[in-house]
Image (cartoon, rainbow, N blue to C red; front, side, top):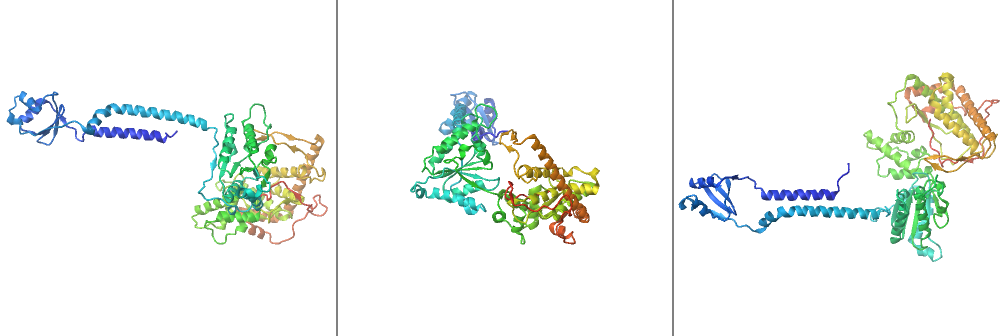
Length: 640
């Protein structure tokens, strides 16, 4: 239900206040009794009248009892004449004080004119209100094409580069833009042109908006912020009009920063849509291109754009003279994560013994926004436990919550399902522990989190920028460890659906090894398939196949071979270390969770990592030269 406007409420309040005042003025506190002239003559004859006040044709008679009576008489007839006409002796009424009230003053005018003027005043006020509403609607219609731009408060706290942790290379690149804005003549004297557009690119949550604010704060110039999606409306031409309005406002307050967030909302490549007709988004993009071309070289306006999809932007946006400077923001490495955690922990009560370095080691692949969410989740968890300080326990539990979701202890499993889950997760952990090129196991649990019945958390010792072939093959064996453990312990007929996600991940890794990384011995060092970006209804609908059906069959056969080889390798580990697998499963059934130290303690002896037996059909794979993986700088921890 819509709330009525404030001015409408004010008018209604004023109306009722006027009515209240008018009613109080006209209505006395005690209502007098109305009597006739005969009754008045009787009261005078009996000596019960104390005084009489004449108010026009009305007599206000005060009786000896203190009550007041009203008597209406004929106009123009005096009271003594009235009494004589009824045969009263003069001595009977001459002793009664008689007062004649003269009409006049403000009370007279209010009582006379207000009953007539009040309806006209109310009707006139209502007409004026309606006229203002119509004028407001017209002005809002004219303002519809104006940009709804937000400007940072001039007297508020400005963001500086010191407030942005990490992103050293990005800040160094943007310092030149700050110099352009602070000392433009220094560059124009040498014939240099101020850059018109700077494109901030990076995964979500890496601090693109924060860095744009820091540029404006360092340069001490106005900061105009608008999302690209706010340009486009259902009406044709509104987006282009808002672009013109935005740049007109920027020219008035130049030098300034114009920040357009999520630039890909209007900056997608033109002509990629399905069907014909007018495209409002393309018209908005055309207007942006025209405005950036129309800048004077010394006008002092720098446009900062932010996107996490630079691959879909129109080439005209990226040519020299527009967004010709591109600043890449990567996911933070371990040192940057430490700095970001220090920033977000500032002012929060942290218990002694909390190792920020240890938290940073456990959060590879986390963006700055993920780390902020992690700290907030830890603080909320400590508050629910009525703690005064945030301890390391809350931080470690919050990492798992951010990665996998909250614990679902209310999800009840039967004893057999718990046993299957324990052996499944034990199989993952055992294979990961025994193979030489997998990350260390940090935690194993059969407590349900999110959609998973259990999980095995393994994290690298350091950030990885490359992945080797040996690491991929060991990762495949580890992914199939749970499936193999179920089959070896319970038999092939008792396999469950719990390994479906593991099989999907293993198939995806194996296919990328063949088609993207060129790590197949059979098909050689080449890629297969070329994807073209064409998004319709949120789905990718085109993929160019640059290989024949014969090669497609070879890819399927190689994919099958790699998966079977990884499964056989995991089978050999499980069979060779069955005693350790039983220990892990029994500990999980008893404790539900095994931390890293307790997991290592289950292996009473510390032999070298397991190797395939000589002569087996799964020989040990030596690490090949590093091959750059297209994944982010540091992959997030895996859990199954």
